[in-house]
Image (cartoon, rainbow, N blue to C red):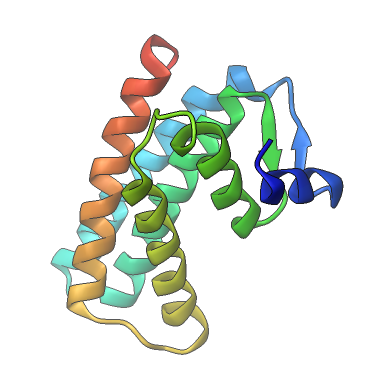
Length: 144
């Protein structure tokens, strides 16, 4: 077992969540909705908002995947750890997808807490979110 994932489990930042399997489709729907909001914000030149919404589109897609494995996160970082342990290391997602998630998380934090955001950052997060949601939908299959 991935040691970081084990630490997240031991610290209670990743917990068993049997109900997650039935909620993963709902999470993917939320991801798609957030992506639409991110695109609308981008088109309105609201790059801070589109960066934040783009990240949350990825967050909900990641959550859908982790839920499908019967786990739930209690921290954004541990969600990224679970994504890597349960999907990247098993060959279901490319390592770049995990890096894109972390990049989006960092850009969201900068936009939220430091008022640092840009057209380029928003564009990158939205592009990553589009790819990630599409891949998550493929992995989840008909439950979505």
